[in-house]
Each structure stands twice: as C-alpha cells, then as structure tokens.
Length: 203
Image 1 (cartoon, rainbow, N blue to C red):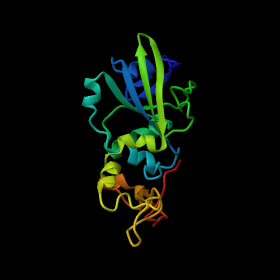
Image 2: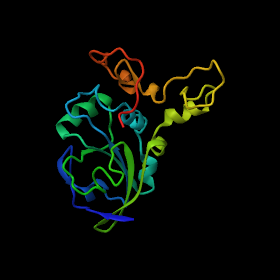
Image 3: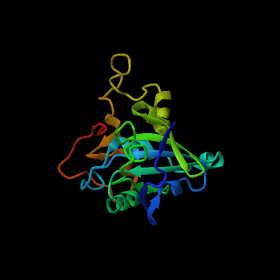
Image 4: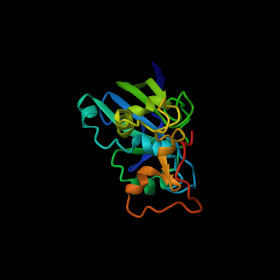
C-alpha cells in the first residue's frame, strides 16, 4: 500500500472537496480515472473511457460492503458538467485537474483510463491497487456478454474461423465519429467532418 494525500483537493458538484470526503464515510473507494480531451466537446471524448463506465449505474452492492465509487476526470469541471449530463451519469464525478499527488490524480501508472482502489484508515488514505488496459474491463458488462456470444467481440486478435465477422481491435467503441454509448442519448448526431464507423481508444 502507498500512502497518498487525503487532503488533496478535487472539484465536484458542491465545489472544492478534500479527497477524504469522496469516501462518503466508507472505508474503501474505487475510482475510475477518465481521460479528457480539453476543448474537444462531448463527442470528442475518449471512446474507450466512455465504453468502460457506461454500464456502471448502481453501486449498491459495493456500498453494502463499505466501498464507495467515483469517477475522477482530468478535465476542468466546467467541461465535465455538460458531458456528464448528456451521458446521464448519476454517480459522483470529480475533476482531478491540478492535483499534484500522483496517487490521487493521474495515478502511479501515470495515464488516465484506469481504475484505482483506496483504503481509508482514520485520516490516512492508501492506494492499494491500480489496473489499466484489459484490467478495466471489470466495469464493462457488455464486453463480457460479447465474449459469451458465438462471434465474440469480432476483433482481429481473436482466433476465429475464416469468414466470421471481425474488425480492428476496439472498432466497436466508436461509430460515426463519436463513442457508441452516446447514440443512446437524445440529440446525438454524427460528429462534424467524420463518417467513420470504426475507431479505437484514445490511449
């Protein structure tokens, strides 16, 4: 375990908040760290991160076991708000912009788009686990369901018979220039100047 700064200041719906308060009175915290492309608008955000947390809506089982869940985003709060509202996210989001402690901010892996786990012991906070890449798929219900189907994820890394549908890895994350989950939202339209029906994570 690595001790991190429990007093580090994030920004959420109620304004600046110390990291300790994000635990919401519980002893453990799971954080998805969402990458951000500043000034890129809603449709210009990472399709990989969007796919990673679109299925995380209800964390009552985590809460029941003393675990809180939050999303930390490297973007400024004023850009996060419209994105969060458009996507219909209801779980807590915080801007980690300007946080100097790497264990709280971008993380030891030094790249957003990953999961960090924390343990609070009184007024001390410890980073206990981080995972990136395939490790983040624990949040992706639909990826797991695709794995159960006959064609799987239909990606070129899979050892599929000749003639089965396959595309470039990660191509199912993006369609018509924007992350696929955005198409379930009212008002979604093709991103300007794009017609691509394939894409890949921004990492």
